[in-house]
Image (cartoon, rainbow, N blue to C red; front, side, top):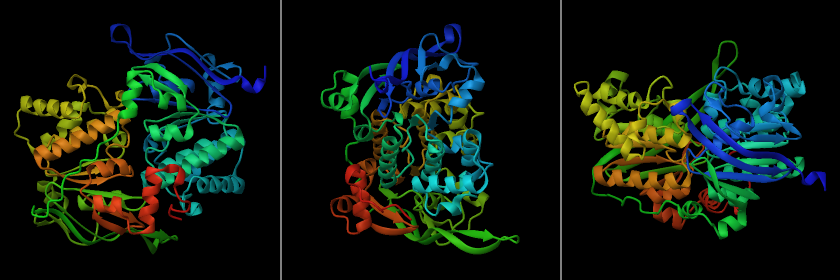
Length: 545
Protein backbone atom coordinates (compact mmCIF):
# COMPACT_ATOMS: atom_id res chain seq x y z
CA UNK A 1 0.00 0.00 0.00
CA UNK A 2 1.16 3.51 -0.80
CA UNK A 3 2.33 5.15 2.44
CA UNK A 4 0.95 8.48 1.25
CA UNK A 5 -2.53 6.92 1.29
CA UNK A 6 -2.28 6.23 5.01
CA UNK A 7 -4.37 8.67 7.10
CA UNK A 8 -2.45 11.55 8.63
CA UNK A 9 -4.98 11.74 11.46
CA UNK A 10 -7.30 9.00 12.66
CA UNK A 11 -9.98 9.61 15.29
CA UNK A 12 -11.74 6.49 16.53
CA UNK A 13 -14.72 6.27 18.92
CA UNK A 14 -13.80 9.58 20.58
CA UNK A 15 -16.02 10.60 23.49
CA UNK A 16 -15.68 13.71 25.63
CA UNK A 17 -17.50 14.15 28.95
CA UNK A 18 -17.67 17.15 31.26
CA UNK A 19 -18.53 17.08 34.97
CA UNK A 20 -18.77 14.15 37.30
CA UNK A 21 -21.31 11.57 38.40
CA UNK A 22 -24.95 12.49 37.83
CA UNK A 23 -23.92 15.92 36.53
CA UNK A 24 -21.71 14.50 33.78
CA UNK A 25 -22.58 15.68 30.28
CA UNK A 26 -21.35 13.84 27.19
CA UNK A 27 -20.47 16.53 24.64
CA UNK A 28 -18.93 14.19 22.03
CA UNK A 29 -20.25 10.64 21.68
CA UNK A 30 -18.12 8.01 19.88
CA UNK A 31 -17.01 10.15 16.96
CA UNK A 32 -14.85 8.61 14.23
CA UNK A 33 -13.24 10.12 11.13
CA UNK A 34 -9.88 10.36 9.39
CA UNK A 35 -7.93 12.95 7.40
CA UNK A 36 -5.31 12.20 4.76
CA UNK A 37 -2.42 14.40 3.71
CA UNK A 38 -3.53 17.29 1.53
CA UNK A 39 -7.20 16.60 2.26
CA UNK A 40 -9.80 18.94 3.76
CA UNK A 41 -12.48 17.47 6.01
CA UNK A 42 -15.26 19.78 7.18
CA UNK A 43 -17.12 19.43 10.47
CA UNK A 44 -20.52 21.11 10.30
CA UNK A 45 -23.46 21.22 12.65
CA UNK A 46 -25.45 23.45 14.91
CA UNK A 47 -23.96 25.47 17.71
CA UNK A 48 -23.19 23.20 20.66
CA UNK A 49 -23.05 20.01 18.55
CA UNK A 50 -19.48 19.21 19.67
CA UNK A 51 -17.46 20.42 16.67
CA UNK A 52 -15.02 22.63 18.60
CA UNK A 53 -14.74 20.16 21.50
CA UNK A 54 -13.67 17.50 19.00
CA UNK A 55 -11.02 19.83 17.56
CA UNK A 56 -9.69 20.82 21.00
CA UNK A 57 -9.42 17.14 21.94
CA UNK A 58 -7.02 16.56 19.05
CA UNK A 59 -4.60 19.11 20.51
CA UNK A 60 -5.34 18.14 24.14
CA UNK A 61 -6.49 21.67 24.92
CA UNK A 62 -9.54 20.74 26.97
CA UNK A 63 -9.31 21.48 30.72
CA UNK A 64 -8.15 18.25 32.34
CA UNK A 65 -9.90 19.19 35.61
CA UNK A 66 -13.39 19.08 34.06
CA UNK A 67 -13.07 17.08 30.83
CA UNK A 68 -12.30 13.41 30.29
CA UNK A 69 -12.36 10.91 27.43
CA UNK A 70 -14.50 7.88 28.33
CA UNK A 71 -13.47 6.28 25.05
CA UNK A 72 -11.45 6.89 21.92
CA UNK A 73 -8.08 7.14 20.20
CA UNK A 74 -6.46 10.01 18.28
CA UNK A 75 -3.63 8.71 16.08
CA UNK A 76 -1.38 11.28 14.32
CA UNK A 77 1.79 10.45 12.32
CA UNK A 78 2.32 7.21 14.20
CA UNK A 79 1.71 8.66 17.68
CA UNK A 80 -1.22 8.35 20.05
CA UNK A 81 -1.91 11.98 21.00
CA UNK A 82 -4.14 11.31 24.01
CA UNK A 83 -1.31 9.32 25.61
CA UNK A 84 1.38 11.99 25.11
CA UNK A 85 2.69 13.81 28.19
CA UNK A 86 2.33 17.60 28.28
CA UNK A 87 5.92 18.38 27.28
CA UNK A 88 5.63 16.24 24.14
CA UNK A 89 2.21 17.49 23.05
CA UNK A 90 3.55 21.06 23.33
CA UNK A 91 6.10 20.24 20.63
CA UNK A 92 3.29 19.01 18.40
CA UNK A 93 1.14 22.12 18.96
CA UNK A 94 2.17 25.08 16.86
CA UNK A 95 4.50 23.01 14.68
CA UNK A 96 2.90 19.78 13.41
CA UNK A 97 -0.68 20.76 14.27
CA UNK A 98 -1.93 24.34 14.56
CA UNK A 99 -5.34 25.84 15.18
CA UNK A 100 -7.18 29.00 14.24
CA UNK A 101 -9.69 29.83 16.96
CA UNK A 102 -13.15 31.25 16.39
CA UNK A 103 -12.78 34.31 18.65
CA UNK A 104 -9.45 36.06 18.00
CA UNK A 105 -9.85 38.72 20.71
CA UNK A 106 -9.79 36.04 23.41
CA UNK A 107 -6.93 34.15 21.74
CA UNK A 108 -4.53 37.07 21.27
CA UNK A 109 -2.68 38.52 24.27
CA UNK A 110 -3.90 42.11 24.79
CA UNK A 111 -0.57 43.10 26.39
CA UNK A 112 1.71 42.04 23.52
CA UNK A 113 2.24 43.49 20.07
CA UNK A 114 1.39 41.54 16.92
CA UNK A 115 5.11 41.17 16.16
CA UNK A 116 5.84 39.66 19.56
CA UNK A 117 2.96 37.18 19.41
CA UNK A 118 3.83 35.81 15.97
CA UNK A 119 7.54 36.01 16.77
CA UNK A 120 7.07 33.82 19.84
CA UNK A 121 5.89 30.92 17.68
CA UNK A 122 8.80 31.33 15.27
CA UNK A 123 11.26 31.45 18.19
CA UNK A 124 9.88 28.39 20.00
CA UNK A 125 9.66 26.10 16.99
CA UNK A 126 12.15 27.51 14.46
CA UNK A 127 14.61 29.54 16.55
CA UNK A 128 14.08 32.64 14.39
CA UNK A 129 14.99 35.99 15.97
CA UNK A 130 15.80 39.56 14.93
CA UNK A 131 15.64 40.67 11.31
CA UNK A 132 15.01 37.14 10.03
CA UNK A 133 11.97 36.73 12.27
CA UNK A 134 10.67 40.20 11.41
CA UNK A 135 10.93 39.52 7.66
CA UNK A 136 8.99 36.27 8.10
CA UNK A 137 6.30 38.04 10.17
CA UNK A 138 5.88 40.79 7.56
CA UNK A 139 5.60 38.15 4.84
CA UNK A 140 2.95 36.21 6.79
CA UNK A 141 0.87 39.34 7.48
CA UNK A 142 1.04 40.24 3.81
CA UNK A 143 -0.09 36.77 2.79
CA UNK A 144 -3.25 37.00 4.89
CA UNK A 145 -4.22 40.42 3.56
CA UNK A 146 -3.10 42.84 6.30
CA UNK A 147 -2.56 46.19 4.50
CA UNK A 148 0.87 47.80 5.03
CA UNK A 149 2.02 44.93 7.31
CA UNK A 150 5.20 46.65 8.54
CA UNK A 151 3.13 49.44 10.09
CA UNK A 152 1.10 46.86 12.04
CA UNK A 153 4.00 45.09 13.75
CA UNK A 154 3.80 47.29 16.85
CA UNK A 155 0.00 47.30 16.97
CA UNK A 156 -1.91 45.67 19.82
CA UNK A 157 -4.98 43.47 19.22
CA UNK A 158 -7.44 46.17 20.34
CA UNK A 159 -6.07 48.47 17.64
CA UNK A 160 -7.18 46.09 14.88
CA UNK A 161 -10.65 45.42 13.53
CA UNK A 162 -12.29 42.04 14.16
CA UNK A 163 -11.39 40.82 10.69
CA UNK A 164 -7.79 41.99 11.00
CA UNK A 165 -7.42 40.15 14.33
CA UNK A 166 -8.67 36.98 12.70
CA UNK A 167 -6.12 37.38 9.91
CA UNK A 168 -3.35 37.70 12.50
CA UNK A 169 -4.54 34.41 14.01
CA UNK A 170 -4.33 32.78 10.58
CA UNK A 171 -0.81 34.13 10.11
CA UNK A 172 0.21 32.64 13.48
CA UNK A 173 -1.27 29.27 12.57
CA UNK A 174 0.55 29.13 9.22
CA UNK A 175 3.89 30.44 10.56
CA UNK A 176 5.55 27.02 10.82
CA UNK A 177 3.84 25.40 7.82
CA UNK A 178 2.05 22.65 9.79
CA UNK A 179 1.05 19.20 8.57
CA UNK A 180 -2.48 19.65 9.92
CA UNK A 181 -4.33 22.94 10.27
CA UNK A 182 -7.47 22.95 12.41
CA UNK A 183 -9.59 25.92 11.35
CA UNK A 184 -12.39 26.62 13.84
CA UNK A 185 -14.66 29.12 12.02
CA UNK A 186 -11.61 30.90 10.52
CA UNK A 187 -13.63 33.26 8.31
CA UNK A 188 -16.39 34.15 10.79
CA UNK A 189 -15.07 37.69 11.39
CA UNK A 190 -14.00 38.35 7.81
CA UNK A 191 -15.83 40.35 5.18
CA UNK A 192 -16.76 38.54 2.01
CA UNK A 193 -13.90 39.80 -0.17
CA UNK A 194 -11.24 38.87 2.39
CA UNK A 195 -13.05 35.58 3.02
CA UNK A 196 -12.67 34.70 -0.65
CA UNK A 197 -8.97 35.59 -0.57
CA UNK A 198 -8.32 33.66 2.68
CA UNK A 199 -10.02 30.53 1.37
CA UNK A 200 -8.02 30.80 -1.84
CA UNK A 201 -4.83 31.32 0.19
CA UNK A 202 -5.52 28.27 2.36
CA UNK A 203 -6.10 26.13 -0.72
CA UNK A 204 -2.85 27.39 -2.30
CA UNK A 205 -0.86 26.72 0.87
CA UNK A 206 -2.45 23.32 1.16
CA UNK A 207 -1.44 22.44 -2.40
CA UNK A 208 2.13 23.71 -1.87
CA UNK A 209 2.74 22.14 1.54
CA UNK A 210 0.59 19.04 1.27
CA UNK A 211 -1.14 20.35 4.39
CA UNK A 212 -4.32 18.70 5.66
CA UNK A 213 -7.18 20.72 7.11
CA UNK A 214 -9.94 20.05 9.57
CA UNK A 215 -12.33 22.87 8.73
CA UNK A 216 -15.06 23.69 11.26
CA UNK A 217 -17.77 25.99 10.00
CA UNK A 218 -21.48 26.70 9.99
CA UNK A 219 -21.34 28.19 6.48
CA UNK A 220 -22.32 25.45 4.05
CA UNK A 221 -21.32 27.64 1.11
CA UNK A 222 -17.72 27.53 2.35
CA UNK A 223 -17.89 23.74 2.74
CA UNK A 224 -18.86 23.47 -0.92
CA UNK A 225 -15.86 25.56 -1.95
CA UNK A 226 -13.07 24.13 0.21
CA UNK A 227 -13.83 20.65 1.57
CA UNK A 228 -13.29 17.21 0.04
CA UNK A 229 -15.36 15.35 2.63
CA UNK A 230 -17.85 16.51 5.25
CA UNK A 231 -18.99 15.18 8.63
CA UNK A 232 -22.33 16.47 9.89
CA UNK A 233 -22.58 16.60 13.69
CA UNK A 234 -25.66 16.80 15.89
CA UNK A 235 -25.77 16.49 19.68
CA UNK A 236 -22.23 15.16 19.85
CA UNK A 237 -22.57 12.51 17.16
CA UNK A 238 -21.71 12.35 13.47
CA UNK A 239 -25.07 11.70 11.83
CA UNK A 240 -23.82 11.74 8.23
CA UNK A 241 -20.49 11.79 6.43
CA UNK A 242 -19.16 11.39 2.95
CA UNK A 243 -17.92 13.19 -0.15
CA UNK A 244 -19.14 16.80 -0.21
CA UNK A 245 -20.82 16.47 -3.61
CA UNK A 246 -22.75 13.36 -2.52
CA UNK A 247 -23.88 14.75 0.83
CA UNK A 248 -24.99 18.07 -0.64
CA UNK A 249 -26.78 16.56 -3.62
CA UNK A 250 -28.46 13.65 -1.84
CA UNK A 251 -28.43 14.15 1.95
CA UNK A 252 -29.60 11.03 3.75
CA UNK A 253 -30.24 12.35 7.26
CA UNK A 254 -33.19 14.69 8.03
CA UNK A 255 -30.89 17.01 9.98
CA UNK A 256 -28.56 17.41 7.00
CA UNK A 257 -31.55 18.23 4.81
CA UNK A 258 -32.71 20.84 7.35
CA UNK A 259 -29.23 22.43 7.39
CA UNK A 260 -29.13 22.66 3.60
CA UNK A 261 -32.61 24.18 3.48
CA UNK A 262 -31.85 26.80 6.15
CA UNK A 263 -31.23 30.26 4.74
CA UNK A 264 -32.63 33.61 5.90
CA UNK A 265 -35.68 34.48 3.80
CA UNK A 266 -35.74 38.06 2.42
CA UNK A 267 -38.51 39.96 4.16
CA UNK A 268 -37.04 43.32 5.22
CA UNK A 269 -38.96 45.96 7.10
CA UNK A 270 -40.59 48.34 4.61
CA UNK A 271 -39.35 51.87 4.14
CA UNK A 272 -41.23 54.26 6.42
CA UNK A 273 -40.99 57.77 4.93
CA UNK A 274 -43.87 59.04 7.10
CA UNK A 275 -42.42 57.80 10.40
CA UNK A 276 -40.42 60.06 12.74
CA UNK A 277 -36.62 60.11 12.48
CA UNK A 278 -34.95 57.95 15.14
CA UNK A 279 -31.27 58.54 14.44
CA UNK A 280 -29.56 61.03 12.16
CA UNK A 281 -25.94 62.08 11.64
CA UNK A 282 -24.46 64.76 9.42
CA UNK A 283 -20.83 64.71 8.30
CA UNK A 284 -19.85 62.51 11.26
CA UNK A 285 -16.11 62.04 11.77
CA UNK A 286 -14.03 59.74 13.95
CA UNK A 287 -10.32 60.36 13.45
CA UNK A 288 -7.70 58.55 15.51
CA UNK A 289 -4.36 60.38 15.89
CA UNK A 290 -1.12 58.74 14.79
CA UNK A 291 1.59 59.65 17.33
CA UNK A 292 5.28 59.05 16.85
CA UNK A 293 8.56 60.01 18.40
CA UNK A 294 9.67 60.42 22.00
CA UNK A 295 7.24 63.29 22.53
CA UNK A 296 4.41 61.35 20.87
CA UNK A 297 3.60 64.12 18.45
CA UNK A 298 0.58 63.73 16.20
CA UNK A 299 1.86 63.18 12.65
CA UNK A 300 -1.40 62.20 11.00
CA UNK A 301 -4.81 60.60 11.52
CA UNK A 302 -6.54 57.30 10.79
CA UNK A 303 -9.86 58.45 9.36
CA UNK A 304 -12.02 55.58 10.57
CA UNK A 305 -15.24 57.48 9.85
CA UNK A 306 -14.82 60.40 7.50
CA UNK A 307 -17.87 62.57 6.92
CA UNK A 308 -20.71 60.02 7.13
CA UNK A 309 -24.35 61.15 7.05
CA UNK A 310 -27.15 58.66 7.72
CA UNK A 311 -30.84 58.83 8.61
CA UNK A 312 -33.01 56.00 9.98
CA UNK A 313 -36.74 56.28 10.59
CA UNK A 314 -38.89 54.45 13.12
CA UNK A 315 -39.33 50.76 12.27
CA UNK A 316 -36.66 50.70 9.55
CA UNK A 317 -33.44 48.70 9.36
CA UNK A 318 -30.35 50.41 8.00
CA UNK A 319 -27.78 47.90 6.81
CA UNK A 320 -24.11 48.94 6.95
CA UNK A 321 -21.80 46.82 4.79
CA UNK A 322 -18.19 47.04 3.67
CA UNK A 323 -14.79 45.44 4.09
CA UNK A 324 -13.23 44.73 7.45
CA UNK A 325 -11.73 48.01 8.70
CA UNK A 326 -14.03 50.17 6.56
CA UNK A 327 -15.44 51.93 9.63
CA UNK A 328 -18.74 50.07 10.08
CA UNK A 329 -18.35 49.24 13.78
CA UNK A 330 -16.72 52.59 14.55
CA UNK A 331 -19.76 54.33 13.06
CA UNK A 332 -22.10 52.31 15.28
CA UNK A 333 -20.06 53.05 18.42
CA UNK A 334 -19.94 56.75 17.59
CA UNK A 335 -23.72 56.93 17.11
CA UNK A 336 -24.19 55.41 20.58
CA UNK A 337 -21.63 57.86 21.98
CA UNK A 338 -19.40 55.00 23.10
CA UNK A 339 -16.44 56.69 21.39
CA UNK A 340 -15.75 60.37 20.70
CA UNK A 341 -16.72 61.87 17.37
CA UNK A 342 -17.25 65.17 15.60
CA UNK A 343 -20.50 66.18 13.99
CA UNK A 344 -24.20 66.25 14.94
CA UNK A 345 -25.89 63.08 16.23
CA UNK A 346 -29.64 63.45 16.76
CA UNK A 347 -31.57 60.68 18.53
CA UNK A 348 -35.36 61.01 18.58
CA UNK A 349 -35.08 64.79 18.33
CA UNK A 350 -32.36 65.10 21.00
CA UNK A 351 -28.82 66.17 20.16
CA UNK A 352 -26.26 63.75 21.62
CA UNK A 353 -23.08 65.45 20.41
CA UNK A 354 -20.97 66.64 23.32
CA UNK A 355 -23.03 64.96 26.05
CA UNK A 356 -21.06 63.61 28.99
CA UNK A 357 -21.39 60.15 30.50
CA UNK A 358 -24.06 61.06 33.08
CA UNK A 359 -25.95 63.14 30.55
CA UNK A 360 -26.11 60.15 28.20
CA UNK A 361 -27.54 57.76 30.81
CA UNK A 362 -31.23 58.67 30.24
CA UNK A 363 -30.83 57.69 26.58
CA UNK A 364 -29.04 54.38 27.21
CA UNK A 365 -32.23 52.50 28.00
CA UNK A 366 -33.56 53.23 24.51
CA UNK A 367 -30.22 52.65 22.72
CA UNK A 368 -28.68 49.20 22.94
CA UNK A 369 -25.96 47.27 21.11
CA UNK A 370 -25.11 43.66 20.36
CA UNK A 371 -21.34 43.40 19.95
CA UNK A 372 -19.53 41.28 17.37
CA UNK A 373 -17.53 39.26 19.90
CA UNK A 374 -19.92 37.91 22.55
CA UNK A 375 -17.18 36.30 24.64
CA UNK A 376 -15.35 39.60 25.01
CA UNK A 377 -18.52 41.51 25.89
CA UNK A 378 -19.87 39.09 28.51
CA UNK A 379 -18.26 39.16 31.96
CA UNK A 380 -16.77 35.73 32.76
CA UNK A 381 -17.40 36.38 36.48
CA UNK A 382 -21.16 36.86 36.10
CA UNK A 383 -23.81 34.24 35.49
CA UNK A 384 -26.00 34.62 32.42
CA UNK A 385 -28.86 35.77 34.64
CA UNK A 386 -26.67 38.48 36.17
CA UNK A 387 -25.39 39.57 32.74
CA UNK A 388 -28.90 40.06 31.36
CA UNK A 389 -30.28 41.47 34.59
CA UNK A 390 -27.55 44.10 35.02
CA UNK A 391 -29.25 46.63 32.75
CA UNK A 392 -32.48 46.30 34.72
CA UNK A 393 -30.64 47.12 37.94
CA UNK A 394 -29.19 50.27 36.38
CA UNK A 395 -32.25 51.58 34.55
CA UNK A 396 -35.08 50.13 36.69
CA UNK A 397 -33.70 50.13 40.25
CA UNK A 398 -37.19 49.94 41.77
CA UNK A 399 -38.19 46.81 39.88
CA UNK A 400 -38.88 43.78 42.10
CA UNK A 401 -36.70 40.67 42.00
CA UNK A 402 -39.58 38.55 40.66
CA UNK A 403 -40.23 40.99 37.83
CA UNK A 404 -36.54 41.16 36.93
CA UNK A 405 -36.31 37.37 36.76
CA UNK A 406 -39.49 37.24 34.67
CA UNK A 407 -37.95 39.71 32.20
CA UNK A 408 -34.75 37.64 32.06
CA UNK A 409 -36.68 34.43 31.42
CA UNK A 410 -38.75 36.11 28.70
CA UNK A 411 -35.63 37.46 26.99
CA UNK A 412 -33.97 34.02 27.01
CA UNK A 413 -37.09 32.42 25.59
CA UNK A 414 -37.16 35.07 22.86
CA UNK A 415 -33.65 34.16 21.70
CA UNK A 416 -34.20 30.40 21.88
CA UNK A 417 -32.26 29.54 25.03
CA UNK A 418 -33.47 27.40 27.90
CA UNK A 419 -34.14 29.73 30.88
CA UNK A 420 -33.01 26.92 33.19
CA UNK A 421 -29.43 27.55 31.99
CA UNK A 422 -29.40 31.16 33.19
CA UNK A 423 -27.35 30.38 36.29
CA UNK A 424 -24.43 29.06 34.23
CA UNK A 425 -21.48 31.19 33.14
CA UNK A 426 -20.59 32.36 29.60
CA UNK A 427 -17.67 29.93 29.19
CA UNK A 428 -20.12 27.03 29.58
CA UNK A 429 -21.86 27.97 26.34
CA UNK A 430 -20.84 27.65 22.70
CA UNK A 431 -19.99 30.69 20.59
CA UNK A 432 -23.43 30.78 18.99
CA UNK A 433 -25.17 30.45 22.34
CA UNK A 434 -23.11 33.33 23.75
CA UNK A 435 -24.23 35.49 20.83
CA UNK A 436 -27.85 34.79 21.69
CA UNK A 437 -27.16 35.73 25.31
CA UNK A 438 -25.81 39.05 24.05
CA UNK A 439 -29.03 39.63 22.08
CA UNK A 440 -31.11 38.77 25.17
CA UNK A 441 -29.15 41.35 27.18
CA UNK A 442 -29.97 44.00 24.57
CA UNK A 443 -33.70 43.33 24.30
CA UNK A 444 -34.41 42.88 28.02
CA UNK A 445 -34.65 46.67 28.42
CA UNK A 446 -37.20 46.95 25.60
CA UNK A 447 -35.19 49.59 23.70
CA UNK A 448 -36.44 51.47 20.64
CA UNK A 449 -33.09 51.46 18.76
CA UNK A 450 -30.52 48.66 18.59
CA UNK A 451 -27.13 48.60 16.90
CA UNK A 452 -26.51 45.01 15.75
CA UNK A 453 -22.80 44.51 15.11
CA UNK A 454 -22.49 41.15 13.33
CA UNK A 455 -25.18 39.53 15.51
CA UNK A 456 -25.34 36.37 13.40
CA UNK A 457 -21.63 35.93 12.67
CA UNK A 458 -21.15 33.20 15.31
CA UNK A 459 -24.36 31.32 14.52
CA UNK A 460 -24.77 28.19 12.44
CA UNK A 461 -27.18 28.23 9.49
CA UNK A 462 -30.23 26.97 11.39
CA UNK A 463 -29.87 29.42 14.26
CA UNK A 464 -28.86 32.21 11.89
CA UNK A 465 -32.15 31.82 10.09
CA UNK A 466 -33.98 31.64 13.42
CA UNK A 467 -32.17 34.75 14.68
CA UNK A 468 -33.15 36.69 11.57
CA UNK A 469 -36.75 35.60 12.09
CA UNK A 470 -36.52 36.60 15.75
CA UNK A 471 -35.09 40.05 14.99
CA UNK A 472 -37.73 40.59 12.32
CA UNK A 473 -40.51 39.46 14.66
CA UNK A 474 -39.27 41.68 17.51
CA UNK A 475 -39.07 44.60 15.11
CA UNK A 476 -42.67 44.15 13.99
CA UNK A 477 -44.09 43.58 17.47
CA UNK A 478 -42.17 46.38 19.19
CA UNK A 479 -41.69 48.73 16.23
CA UNK A 480 -37.93 48.57 16.72
CA UNK A 481 -35.35 50.43 14.67
CA UNK A 482 -32.11 48.64 13.76
CA UNK A 483 -28.67 49.67 12.59
CA UNK A 484 -27.49 46.34 11.20
CA UNK A 485 -23.73 45.95 10.64
CA UNK A 486 -22.66 42.81 8.83
CA UNK A 487 -20.37 41.30 6.23
CA UNK A 488 -22.93 38.58 5.48
CA UNK A 489 -24.87 40.14 2.64
CA UNK A 490 -27.42 37.33 2.58
CA UNK A 491 -28.46 38.24 6.12
CA UNK A 492 -28.41 41.95 5.26
CA UNK A 493 -30.64 41.32 2.25
CA UNK A 494 -33.11 39.52 4.54
CA UNK A 495 -33.38 42.41 7.00
CA UNK A 496 -32.29 45.77 5.59
CA UNK A 497 -34.76 48.42 4.41
CA UNK A 498 -31.97 50.75 3.37
CA UNK A 499 -28.31 50.04 2.67
CA UNK A 500 -25.07 51.99 3.15
CA UNK A 501 -21.84 50.69 1.59
CA UNK A 502 -18.66 51.94 3.30
CA UNK A 503 -15.01 51.93 2.30
CA UNK A 504 -12.05 53.73 3.91
CA UNK A 505 -14.44 55.43 6.35
CA UNK A 506 -16.57 57.00 3.62
CA UNK A 507 -19.95 56.15 2.13
CA UNK A 508 -19.44 54.69 -1.34
CA UNK A 509 -23.10 54.12 -2.15
CA UNK A 510 -26.45 54.25 -0.37
CA UNK A 511 -30.15 53.87 -1.03
CA UNK A 512 -33.09 51.48 -0.66
CA UNK A 513 -31.64 48.00 -0.14
CA UNK A 514 -33.73 46.32 -2.84
CA UNK A 515 -32.56 48.84 -5.45
CA UNK A 516 -28.88 48.53 -4.52
CA UNK A 517 -28.93 44.73 -4.57
CA UNK A 518 -30.68 44.77 -7.93
CA UNK A 519 -28.53 47.45 -9.57
CA UNK A 520 -25.35 48.54 -7.74
CA UNK A 521 -23.88 51.67 -9.32
CA UNK A 522 -20.23 51.60 -8.24
CA UNK A 523 -17.56 49.08 -9.17
CA UNK A 524 -16.70 48.53 -5.53
CA UNK A 525 -20.28 47.61 -4.60
CA UNK A 526 -20.53 45.26 -7.57
CA UNK A 527 -17.28 43.56 -6.52
CA UNK A 528 -18.51 43.27 -2.93
CA UNK A 529 -21.76 41.65 -4.05
CA UNK A 530 -19.91 39.31 -6.42
CA UNK A 531 -17.68 38.12 -3.57
CA UNK A 532 -20.69 37.57 -1.31
CA UNK A 533 -22.90 35.64 -3.67
CA UNK A 534 -20.26 33.73 -5.65
CA UNK A 535 -16.90 33.35 -3.93
CA UNK A 536 -15.39 31.62 -6.93
CA UNK A 537 -15.85 34.70 -9.13
CA UNK A 538 -14.80 37.27 -6.55
CA UNK A 539 -12.60 39.83 -8.33
CA UNK A 540 -8.99 40.19 -7.26
CA UNK A 541 -7.70 43.39 -5.67
CA UNK A 542 -10.94 44.44 -3.98
CA UNK A 543 -9.49 44.40 -0.47
CA UNK A 544 -8.05 47.69 0.77
CA UNK A 545 -4.36 47.97 0.16
